[in-house]
Amino acid sequence: MTMQNVPWGHGSAVGDAFARVWNSLNVVCVYVGLYLALDWISFIHVLPTVGYTLWNPPPACSLALLLAKGLRYAPLLFVVSVVSDGLTAGFPAGLAPTVAADAIIAAG
Image: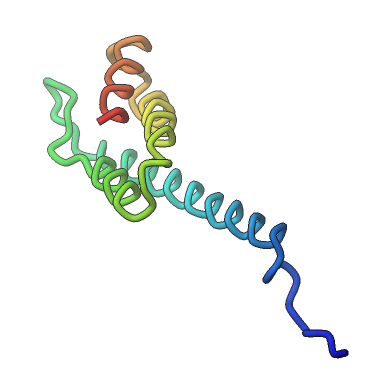
């Protein structure tokens, strides 16, 4: 009887579950970093009288995530957008309106 030389984590239920979690964690980290960077960069040219920017790339990043990985990442959109609004703009409309707007956007 010969034993197959299988690398650790390949072909076992535990290894497959670990690989799925690891891949999901990588997707989350890349998305969060990209979203925060794009949101921060978009505030370089803010219109002085209204406080808006002429371009907003983070929603495109969110759409790409949902198209590539599916709706199971929709709650992540909400969490990252609230955190990003707090870090980049400091909740300009207040916390409650910001959370409500971000929840509507994440729900679709």
